[in-house]
Each structure stands twice: as structure tokens, then as C-alpha cells.
Length: 170
Length: 250
Picture 1: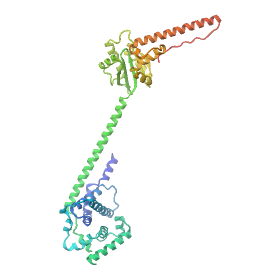
Picture 2: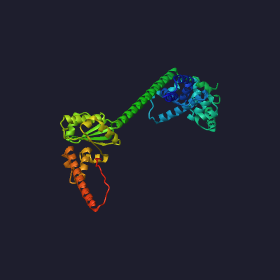
Picture 3: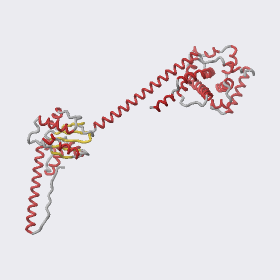
Picture 4: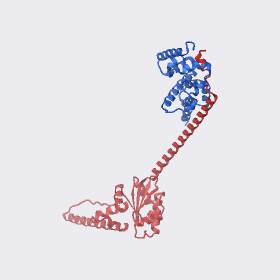
């Protein structure tokens, strides 16, 4: 019974743990959702899904950095899965289309729109590299790709951004 | 600060989104806990059911059988704890008796005593009636000893025998108790023309009388032959050892 209980505690993370993770990573998860999803319902779905995975995640983390990288990876994968699910859906509610774009103000919209117009894989590397400031080797680990692939994606993404908004964005 | 970072600075998780998510997780956690508790309860219930079922099967399964035959023929199934778990009648009188006497779950000695008392009260156990108790069991010696030592069985002069499961099966195919069937088998050794149907109409007293008559007749014949043989030897002046056998019911 004691073993079962300790297992139970291990399986479901404590409320304190959840509150801490919410404060620490909510903004990052939200930004990743923003990069991929078009409306707040999808964002809420994926956001909850990421924290649900955290609630059920049995293994521990070596450090806060390790935990942060886990959240980034899980959020990116959750968005990809959700988009795959949406692509099978035959219809989209009219009132939620492009809702996310409303939160952009004029000053930031140009850069953001350029980032959002990039293919999905480039959006991820640009965000992780320029916003989260992860090195290429860490991005490779998060995305489950080779380091060289990350470098070539970064290079191609920079090229595309330069074409769209000129050279002064980084 | 690079422009990309700057452009995303304002994108933050709203308090509403955080609270919704925390509430959703709280709900999920409660559901998971409730589900787990339901699982434990279900597992405990299954375990109890298994223990109860196994225990009941252990209790309800007869390991020994006792056939009590006077004229009414009744068979009792006895479980490993020495209690009656089955009671079957093999003639009309037996059925009437079982309706009157509640034997189930009683220790077998008490059940036999109760049955004999009931038979006595119903007029089956007259002075010339005889009681036959036949046992099938791995522990037949113990059971027979206990029956022989029992006051009521002694009072009615019960004769005891043993049988086996194969005979019980044969007996049932002839709709007869294995106690009576044992007597039939014994009598049929002396009288090959005897049929099971004929035995159905006889009481145990009648069957046993005929067995004894046949046995005496055969012993008498043997003794006569032996006497003649000894006489012939005497005439020849020879000598031979003398042995004595006791026949016994098995």
C-alpha cells in the first residue's frame, strides 16, 4: 500500500509543483502556441494538454533548464499534433478564424507576421534561437533533429526573413 | 534586444488561461483519484468474491458419502469439515423423510442420529428392521469408528460397510443408493438370477436376510464337504491342518 501511494504521488504531480510550473513556463508555452495556432480555443486545448502531460509525467528533471527544454519540446509537439488533427477536420468555425492576429500591435506586427509566414519548422528554430536563446545543439535536442539540420534551417529561415523584412530584425 | 524577441514580449499567458488550466488539472486529478479509488474498491470486491466463492466451493464440495438404508434409502454428501452438504433420497420413503428432517449443514453424526430418530418416529425402524450405513471416503476408518461409537447408531444396531465411487456411479445409474447397491452386489454373488429391479422392491432387512441365508447355506455346504473329506482322510490314516475363515462384508 505504501509503495502504491508513493507511486501515486510520483504519477500525479503535486498542486504546488503545478503552480510553480505554471508561473515559470506558461508564457513560453503560450508563445509556442501563438506561433502555430490560429485561435484561442485551440491554444487553450494545447495549453491544457501540455500541462496535463506535465501532471502525468513520471520522471524527474535534472535542473530547471532541463524542465524548461521539456516544456518547449512538449509544447511544439502538442501544437504539431493538434494541427495534424485540425487538418483532418473538414470545417473551421468562422468566428475564430484569424483571431490570434488581433493581439498584434502595429509595431511588432511586421516582424511577427514575417515569422508566422515561415514554414512550421523554421518558426520553431527562429523562436528557440532568437527568443529562448537556445544554442543550436540544444535546439537539435528539443526538436529531435541533427545539429547540422538546425543550422541549415536557421540559415534558410534568416534568408526568408531578410527577403520579407530586410536585414535589421535580429 | 533583437526585434524578434521584442515582437513576442507582449505575448503572454493570460491569468484567465492559467486559472482555467489549473482548474482543469484539478478536476482531472480528482477524477484520476476517484477512478483509482474505484479501481481499488473493485479489486477488493473481486478479491472478496473470489475468497467467498472459493471458500464456498470448498465448503459445498462433498469429499465423503454416507448411505443410510433401512427401507428408506438416503445418501448424505459430507464436506471436508464433516458437515452434510448434500442429502438425496433414493425411494419415496426417503423423500418423505428428507422433507421432515433438516440435515444440511449439520455434522454427519448428528444428521445420521436425526435421520434415525425420524425413521423411528415414522415407524420405519421396527424391531425387526435393520440399519445399514455404507461409507465412501478416504477417511473411511475414522468415519466408521465414529459411527460405531455413536450412541444412536449403536442403539439401532447399525451395520457398517464401505463402498467406492465407481459402485456409487453404477448404483445411481440404477436409481439406487450405493448402500443398497452394495447389498445387491453381495447377494448377486450367491444368486446370479437376481435383478436390480427385484431389489428395488425389497427392504434392506429382506436383502440382508437373504444374504445371510445364502451365506449359511454355502458355509453349511462347505462344512459338510470338509467333514466328508476329513472322514475319508481318517479312514486313510492321514492328517491335515485346520483353518478357519471369517467372511466379512467389505
